[in-house]
Image 1 (cartoon, helix red, strand yellow):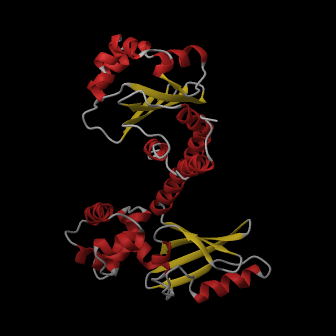
Image 2 (cartoon, rainbow, N blue to C red):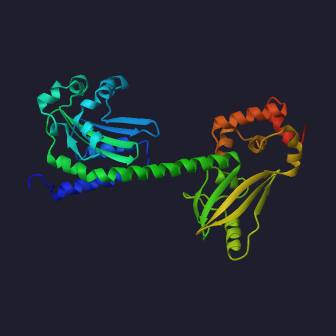
Image 3 (spheres, rainbow, N blue to C red):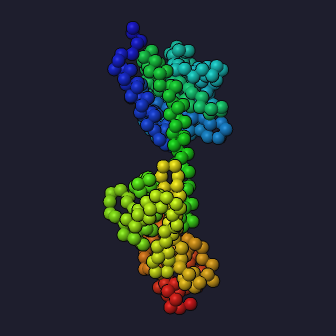
Length: 352
């Protein structure tokens, strides 16, 4: 049949669907989807429109990007949307199937409409094929393809109708992954600010993942093997496996100068979570109590006293250099000293 896809054309559609599902980020989703769809639909300009009424959010993306299309150039379209036959049909019926402007209007009828004269003529669109999907109540996605002639075919319609059901699932998947990423970043930030780190291992002691700064902290107490993938120091692995053989493992405490590192083990399904925290020694603690330093400021001060630069401290603690600089400025002000050397003397008990 004339409008039936060949085996190669079906494979192209399947490749497109697979490509759409590869998106892992909501911010890149619109352009990613347009890029994949343009592999199976020939057009001079594709547009992605996302309307989230509950979230009071509208996203408009064009592919390829058209710098000349700005919010001001889109104003005529916004004012004349009721003249768009496909949008009107979708609004009345909720049917988001793939449709062309030419399904409703002849070329002459289209040219007579203000929406053509004030918008489509300026972007070189003589016809448009588009579809819409409802993601959730009040949340819709519309994707449109524009051409300089009336050349869209029934095969184009079939291709888009085959892909259309997958857009919602791909969007929801990207949204879920983005949510997980946001929570991961929030957790890492909280752990950094609280002076804690987490290292996850399997039951054999192999590292699965770790929070920023955790291994850098370990390296100041024990030699850390130099591998492409992070590896626990042997002493920690032995302690971990000894505890897993039976009973409850006591925390592992490592001392260095005036500070100590405490590692606690928490079982989580088929892995171990190592909670890494650093505490100041009693001698330094007594000297610094009267200065009302926060736990993070004490941690930064400890490395200042060790002669570390702001950039080195930022790498150790997993902070930005700018954040370390602000901590150092606050520390010097609280200690009532003008420079890092004087602060180090207070830490080491040479002066008060």
